[in-house]
Image 1: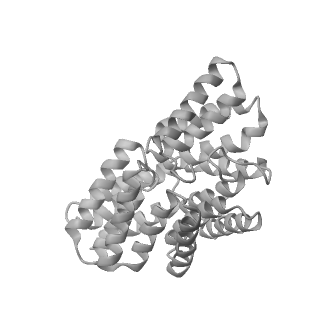
Image 2: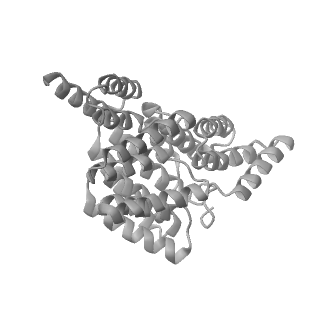
Image 3: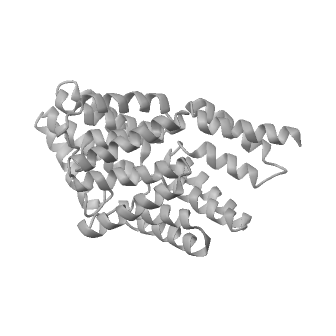
Length: 317
C-alpha cells in the first residue's frame, strides 16, 4: 500500500480474497481486518458508499474482537465524513483516538491514532472549530515524529497540509508539502505525493501552479485514486478564478459537482455549489440556497456561515 497506493488493483484482490476466506473459514477477526483494509481501498478508489458499508461491517465484527475496534471506528468516521455525516464522523474519530494504543496499526500501514487525529482535523474545521482542527492536526504530526514512523508521518503531513489550506495558512502548507515531498522521494511512497503536488500548486498559483495542480490530479487519476476529487477540482477552479478565467473555473466546478453526485463525495459539495453560484450572478440564488440547505443538513457550520454571508450580500444588492 505504501509503495503502490491504496487503489492498487492487486492489493484489492488480496483484500477481497482475505474477506472471502475469513467468511468461509468462520474467522470473524480475519473478516474484520479485511473489511478495514477494503474500507481504505474502496474509499480511495472513490466508492464512498461501499467504503462506508465495509466500515460498518468492520465495526460490527469488532464487537467480538475489541483489539480492532479503534481501526473500525476510524473507518466509519472517515467514510462518514465524505458522505457528509459530520457529527457521526466526529464521534467515531474521538472513539478511535481513545481506543487506539500507541502501537495500534491499520492494515494499510499507518498508526491508527495518528491517522484518526489527522483526519479528525477536517471534521473539526467543518463543524466550526478551527482551533480544534489545528490542535488535532498538530498532535497527529507530533505523534508520528515521536514514534519515528515514516509512513505515518507522511500521511499526517498530507492531512496537515490540507488542514493548512482550510485554515488559509499558506506558509504552513508549503512547509508541510516540502517535507512531504522529501519523504515520498526518500521512501518511494505512492499516493500522498499527489496531495503535495496539488496543494503546492494551489499555494504557488499562476500558470505554473495550475499546471502542477492538474498534473497532481492526473497522477492520482492514473493510479485510480479518486478520493477527495471534488476538493482537488475545487482547488483547480480557485486557481482559474484567481487568474481571471471564470469559464474555466465554472467548468472545473461543474466537473466537481458531477463527481460528487456520482461518487457520493459530499463533504465539500456545499462549498463547490456556493462558489459556482458566485460565478452565476443572475441565476446563482437557487444554487446558493441549495448549498446552504446541504451545509445545514451536514452540520457543516463553517460552510453554512459562508453561504449565509453570500446570501446576505445578494440580498443587499
